[in-house]
Length: 283
Image 1 (cartoon, rainbow, N blue to C red):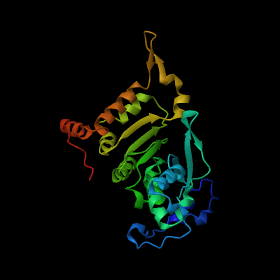
Image 2: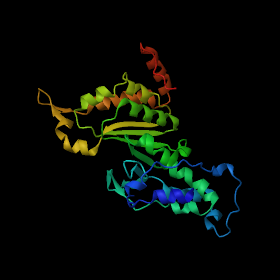
Image 3: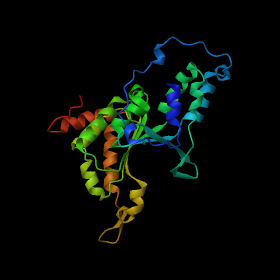
Image 4: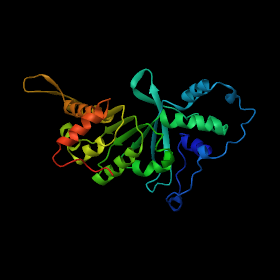
């Protein structure tokens, strides 16, 4: 499993297969390393001689604080091609592409694999296009770690129907997410986007069913903001400058009120009680 992870986390582009090589991945039974008998630790593994706290710091430096973009390598989903980014300290809103993650340390021995893999899953942001999320996640990183991934970012760059959103929200509810970000690049005015994302719509009720978040963000992509600058800063009839994104910001604040914070569940239950059509089933 470690070698598979190592191959997956390499960031250079793999050669595309021929059409006759494209096929659905063969289901395989994964070995649960936490349930198998531990192997004898190698005597030459000097990392094991370090205190556990120091090893975790090393894992954090090698594996954490990246945004990992995952997309299909072919339309028929023969594999995935990841890209890894790290924050640019000089420009906080930018990300710098890094050549690879230091996951080779996980191949050293079983003990380091078990200690380092949770850092890889819990301390990185996994970013998917909404169109591919429900199909790609079971392949990479895999359903076996659905309970350990903590941060997900979804790119909403193409129109997605209600069925696709339902599959997406079903998978998100299986996770124990701490942060969720939805970045929209749909090129229309802000108000129609706000209306389609309203709390009383099916989309909003499915999003609200995701509980336990520490942070939530729904925003517009940098490309959209740059190409629609006239819609970001508008001027009203009195000549005053108006924030064109204010309706979206207010909507996000409403979602955060019901989803983030120590009293979010109490407010969420009160919100459901006020709905005349009853809560949306999330079973």
